Image (tube, rainbow over all chains, first blue to last red; front, side, top):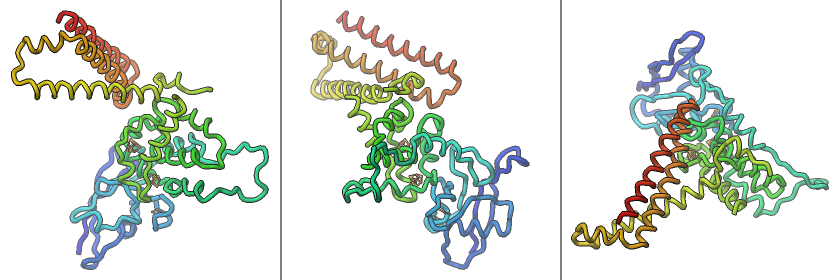
Length: 236
Length: 115
Ligand code: SF4
Ligand code: SF4
Ligand code: FES
């Protein structure tokens, strides 16, 4: 069985413009595999094909890419899920391309840095041992801490495409909320102050592309809604 | 409390609330007009004039026109900051669009006054 691929190729040192290149892969009849495995097999034949990958099991977030028009992790996206016909693979949209499927994530990380993704606690006396949370307090972090920063969400968000320098984006905001509701964090007000402008949070128009692509099944839109209501409650 | 409002020009929370509040007025007006057309068998000039001669209808219409102006101001500012990156061009477009939005209110006011 022959599988057809069309893969985005761009080497800024040599090419004037990006182009789509066709590839074929011979596999056993009826065999399914992950997109990443197919890419690795294709790279054996054409070593110039570039992409990132590390864990190969949906944990590290390295291989976010656009497959048949939808962002996802190549390592946990089976070819069978992409339907019949040619598989079109492109880099994550909206981010500058370094080479082929490798994108420059600087803008994404800059937004992530802005939300101060670490616990801030100014308690005079930090606990001598563990920082105990009740089960209820801990449960609030579920659906937030699992994010692996693969950028599938932010790079599928039109608001992030148009204002990547001002809008934090779904991934960053998911993390912002993760620290806002952490019972051990004491910088809630400071954090909200930093989000209290017309772009950082409010550029989210609830398009929900982020929710539809997140390979971890997380819901950034919901977290963003919670941040908005925290900001509103503070304002009235 | 230090916020970076100044550098971002518009206030996110205020815009968020204003957009929704004005949308509610615009929606109410739309539903009212639908109701009017559905329940009025023949809309003659007299019926139409009588509707707008009512002082409450005048107030409602004016409130709707002002809501549209505010809604347009914020909404189009968001659209323009998304798509028009050169600042000068954006400021120019913003100016023209705001002027048009204002003209609708001004003209609407004169029309209502005349009924
Ligand atoms: S929220 Fe989901 S899609 Fe977005 S970066 Fe985290 S894991 Fe990836
Ligand atoms: S819901 Fe918000 S953050 Fe998510 S894709 Fe839409 S605009 Fe972007
Ligand atoms: S290679 Fe680690 S998430 Fe796909």
